[in-house]
Figure 1 (tube, one colour):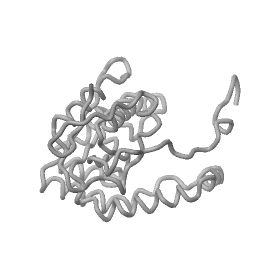
Figure 2 (cartoon, helix red, strand yellow):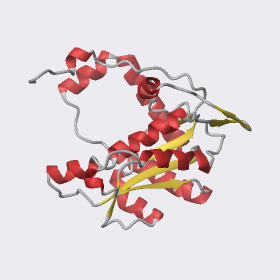
Figure 3 (cartoon, one colour):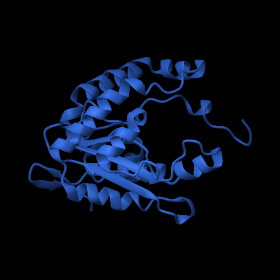
Length: 225
């Protein structure tokens, strides 16, 4: 049985596999900023994360966890300065169409992101997954192998966190200032790539629900596009 801390007591969410998969949300506004996350819970999540598939069994994944106060503030400062620079690729017309399908929920996402930025220094833990090998100038086949060896592990970490009453949100805000963040964390930048920047905290309540998504017939293809 899997447990999470509530006060001084151990409590269990006891979610089914389908519930964990459908209710692991990007948690921003509902992160509990007042409670530290026990190291034991994070270690359990990492143990489960490293059961994920990995290309050629190379297991090049790493998880940097930041909880110490001064280090957290330094890392949070990088997040705040990097986020405005992480613009990504322009949205396509189809992107906008899908976003408008549930316009209200999309607006809530941006509202919660602003809240996270305003409160990032209060988040009790940051998890920064990393992978050996850089893809800055790599071919697509090399990129797919490297990212395919870290993304499943990180998603497993986030699912394990959900079962333990913890909330996460995948961000790539570190990317524009990755070199600076690597220096703060003592990461050998030329050899290791920081894959994401994940705030971690207990959630305010555990009653998360499946998100509204575009209909299945818009994404499911049989035999051909």
